[in-house]
Picture (tube, one colour):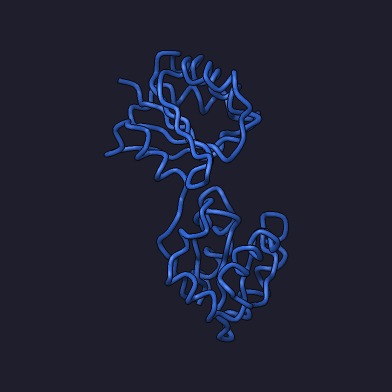
Length: 221
């Protein structure tokens, strides 16, 4: 069995009882960053073997892991924060498990774009999640396509690129389009700023920007 375990996006208290129980029971924990996961495991007094598993080594180690899973070992996959597979490694090993008839179970848990969508105040009965935009190739094409999207849109972004991205959104979507930017979700300095793309850009241009960021943008009316 391979368990996909969501981890807190900031506040360690958001870990579920079930996730802790499973992590204490498995034979091996696969971690995107063993240092980050080590802090979480120490907090919950979980003493298990950790193996690095990330986008740079997943193609090299997955075949061996599949063999061990077929032999009956139980493993859990963690990423640094949130649900593995959502803009994080997981797809490749899940696909290989399915090919080899190995059970996969994803636990419910933290994912940053969900509280950001709810906090935005924008309609979320229908929405699309775009994750991180392409840095160069394909960015113009995607933004052009999204300019006519009628559903509320959610994006992930880094602090260093936030202002540039908001400017591009204003260029492609119109500076009066409503949006919401959430950062440091579930942490001490959690903040959500709502307004037009221009207003939110101007607000953050006067600040030092830190933390993981979710941008929510109104769809075309």
